[in-house]
Length: 125
Image 1 (cartoon, rainbow, N blue to C red):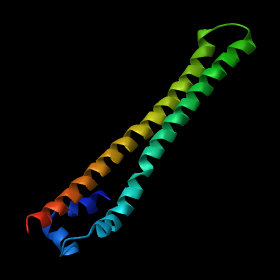
Image 2: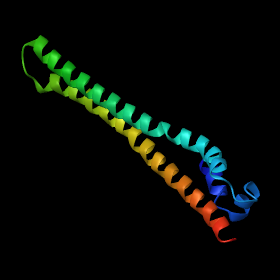
Image 3: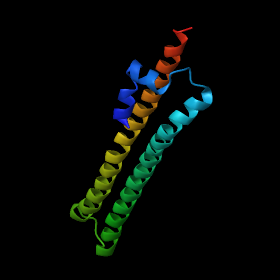
Image 4: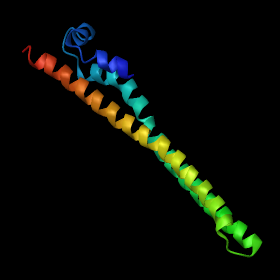
């Protein structure tokens, strides 16, 4: 996706694709597959954050369950559950942060390319 958008930054390439001014409908058809693709990224980010949170809750719950079954509070028992909880949080964030970054990057790149297309034909009038 990124390489195709980078090619669109070249004015001569854009003019090959659109020799005359594109209509709004043509622009919509051109950009809609890209927009549909990048709109999955926030969903992936949200789900990964929620799954990380779920893992955190499960890890803490298992730590307290282990302490309850042993009948005593100990750092060793608590540490294992907390470690699992933090690991799932880390994995969730490692998925969510890049997904949100690439979503913003893609949105901004599509907006920039569409602005270039508008400028291409507004200068020729």
